[in-house]
Length: 106
Image (cartoon, rainbow, N blue to C red; front, side):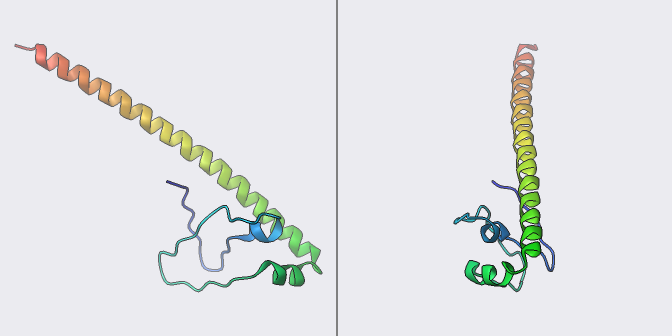
């Protein structure tokens, strides 16, 4: 179970592989409706973007900000799952105590 992030028209993903030395993608994308995807190979990206270092810097910042946001949301998601497990365990214990009390009634 992972974090779900909804993209809108004009959004992009996978930029981290273009602006860093990462070889593997850190995320996967699944289309929930018909969409048009464009693919940009790293060598073409470098040829287009390197002469315009300001664009590279902006895309790097977007990538870093998104990475920070995803890390934060993943942390929140894990904390939420821990709380749900704790509540579920407490509820089971309460139900077991209730069953025991009901069994003792005449």
